[in-house]
Length: 312
Picture 1 (cartoon, rainbow, N blue to C red):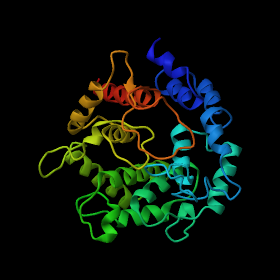
Picture 2: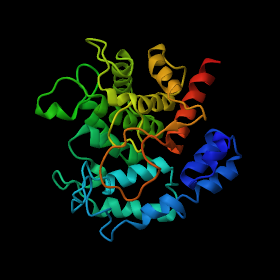
Picture 3: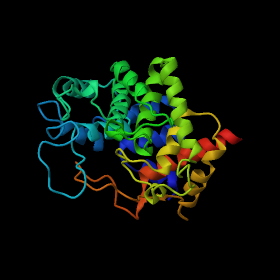
Picture 4: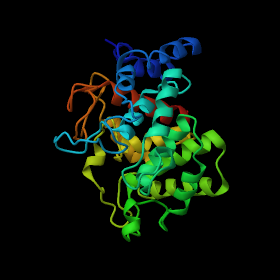
């Protein structure tokens, strides 16, 4: 079976994106397939799990009750909304609009009871909240302003800054950059937010997306493996996806990460699932680490199409 056929033989959340990004399907057919995400398959299952209190599993970042499984639980409101975003659920759908209204009105952060879309104090959380708020049609200017003011001298961000850290974190920085880019695309951004985003990009590029600036060593070997869902974690594919979203020609400082991505393709043309982040989940999306991954294959092919096309 061709890789494209394998991707199309899947849940609507994957199928509509493969139709749009890889198969060049007509706009009307893509839209019709996307509309299924909230009504069928994984997207519908997630929406059905929302509680009467407007939350998933009784909490914003963490569920009301810990399952006791190893790792961080991924069943609460933030990771579920991230999945719906990854699935590309149509934010204009009435079922989705009701779900988001439930979060807006009923979900509060564990930190100090802040309303969900007001954000809380950690930039890694607030970056993701901006991405979600923008996607679901909410005004996120105040959270963006806070993030811009929290940028560190080296150009990135770190959730540990409130405890004295002056060195940025790749994990935090990628979450903030995604939020700033989403806000800029939706609103035009501000001069300050655009400048902050570009400084943050340079932070990653100076380190070739993977390495310490000081020694040139790979910061974390786990970043050489590709997970899905990414949650709050950084890795080389997530960084490349971000720069694909920015557009334009790939910077030469991305070459190592692009070569890594090429090297991960199997003889059958797929990419594997690697380094799944442990913790309880609403339900399993794929067959586990070491097995072909539709999500990673879709994501990798999109990046390589961009990188190749931009250079042609």
